[in-house]
Amino acid sequence: MEENTFIQDLMKPTATFVGDKDTRSTLAVFGVALLLITVKIYYSLGIKNSELHDEVRFLDDWSISFEESTYAISESVIIADGTEEVLDFEIDLSELPDDFRIGIIQVQISYSETSQNVADPCDSVQATLVQTEYPAQWLDENNNLNGGSNSCETINLELLTYPGYNGESYETEADNKVIALDPWKLDGYGIGTLTLEVSVDVQTSQIPTQNNDNDETIQIDITVLGFMPNIAMID
Ligand SMILES: [Ca+2]
Ligand SMILES: [Ca+2]
Image (cartoon, rainbow, N blue to C red):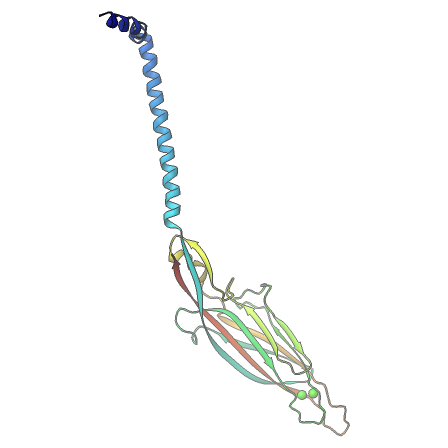
């Protein structure tokens, strides 16, 4: 009995405090505010977590490699001393397997001294891939658009047609396979008229009894390098 009285005495100020009408209203407002803040924090954390979760769930690692196929165009031309020939070559996809695109054009210009004169030195040959409307990466730093020789060495020219193509495998992150292959789905590059200029300046035998050298036969071999990407998911 004494204990009960003691507890009642102890609770009296609290009961009086909570029993007051203004205090109840104030407590109710604080309670609602606290509830709203709690809900807001809960939802903010929830949405943030789900965004992080989505990134982790959807970005996969992919390995991309390239299958290559080539075809060649060859032409032999006799070019007179002191002249320049402008040669056009039609490049298209018809000689490549389905779904291949053109990545790189390689051009070899080769020759020897064909005059059969004694001690006739090699002629001087210059070759240039001329920048035209032909759709290619004309400004790529790895291009080799000009070359020359005066010693019968083969001249090698190269032009990147497809943006960023170098044939090397790489890994990438993407939501799915289609997005990972996006860089390799552009059409039109490398298809059109490729223009090559070749000029000859002869060097003639110094032996007086020999005929003058006045031209050279130039062999042009163009390799059209096509590619198709292969993709595999990395576990
Ligand atoms: Ca010569
Ligand atoms: Ca010659």
